[in-house]
Image (cartoon, rainbow, N blue to C red; front, side, top):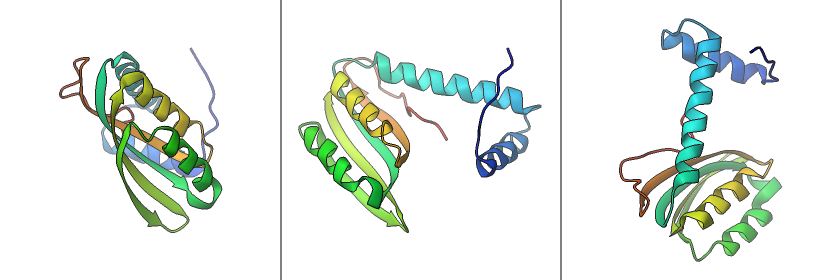
Length: 141
């Protein structure tokens, strides 16, 4: 099936550089693999059950989102154990360490992904009642 995508030029150039450096034979193959990884990571998050321990790593435009982000963090304060925050110019990088019911952690992840000012959310499921031992990231680079 053929499809078209709108991708920022810089991102496409970096993507092309990456798949070529890995020795893949085409951009199409690299896109298929990237899509497969995305689908698999989404399923890991969706299939998690019981109590999970996770690290959520995300970047965001500080001035555009900070008040809304604080509201979300207060809404999920029972699940959030601690956060680590660093500044990189106008962008911030934050790691949120949390523990709680898998459905609450999923809601937190999807709330973060819903903000336009959040660039990316990666999830590392560290432990859980639902057989997560050894499984890694929700978003792979």
